[in-house]
Image (cartoon, rainbow, N blue to C red; front, side):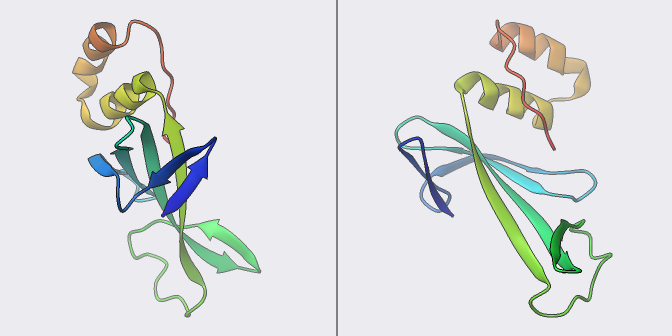
Length: 117
């Protein structure tokens, strides 16, 4: 997936993948990327199905299968992150809850909210 956002080119095939996250409820997958130019971003992939002419998010756990051809798609989005937001994303998705506060104090002197949704 390629996107240009505010003059910066993001390319999920070219850019380095730093970490992966699969939502516990299998609603989506996210990959933290780093560009050669030093930019961070999250590539989110959400499985969707068409119901009544509207695309709806669906769990990626097989509970809605089989679906007819043309009724399923992966919707991908790219969200640019600051360095602090990238660190916060990593803490939220990879650090045990008991260590998260300590890691934030150590590596994030200023709050950098990132919401997994």
